[in-house]
Image 1 (cartoon, rainbow over the protein chains, first blue to last red):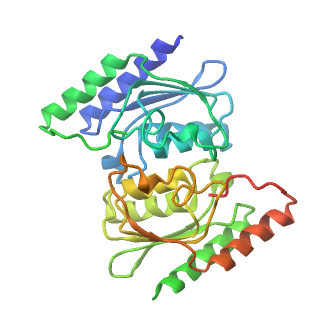
Image 2: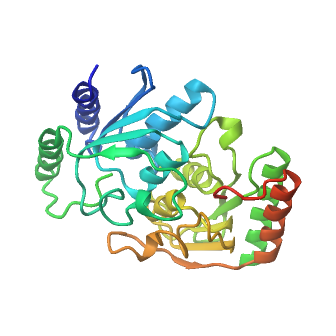
Length: 157
Length: 157
């Protein structure tokens, strides 16, 4: 599968999250051979867990499956720019590559805010690219918040 | 109990982590009435989970116990300055207060590195103080790394 296909899979997870009334963000974690190790959508409300962002759930599931806390060479596809928590988790997990869809100027931590991977104290940096399937992901988020009449969206991650 | 007593409890969790060969960091999460909701030590190796820092485990346990993802008014005592992942999790959980012991210039995210709570895009800031039981926590970390002859410590959080 190619990168847009993995992102389509992540978008399906985001839509499933919206159907659960969670902020529609989805993630897919892929090993160096292109095998899907984990896929997840946001579940902070369902799990009563403020850390249950799609990225964290995917990283935890993939690491548990491999039986080790590091995911060297793996890639994460996520429908929204990761927040600082998730960006640091990506660094701690030694992910090799991050691909995200929509940018998040209000809550993102990669190209916005603390720009986690640009910090001199960041000990591992994945290569990363944003904007893959950007409009599909952004539309999904916009429609979710519009339907709930939330004029000023909270941090999205 | 007073703040140094909660920190002593967190130090006990840190010592227990060291005994499991995990980086010795411990955390205690306390509700506004001073009741302990969760206590945890680092377990990334044991759980094969790069996010299993003491702070994350304590936040997840406390939120699950309360049945909601926000911990308004609660306080977290942790033996080391939180890393950026944990600092952002503290913000997402709406914790009211953070007390930490040792400072972490190499990997911390509160007074060092990205200074998560100082970012304009940080949507919730706890009050925080560092240096409570600092020397006890720092000694524990130093002895842990010295015993393993790790001259250049990795990020500690």
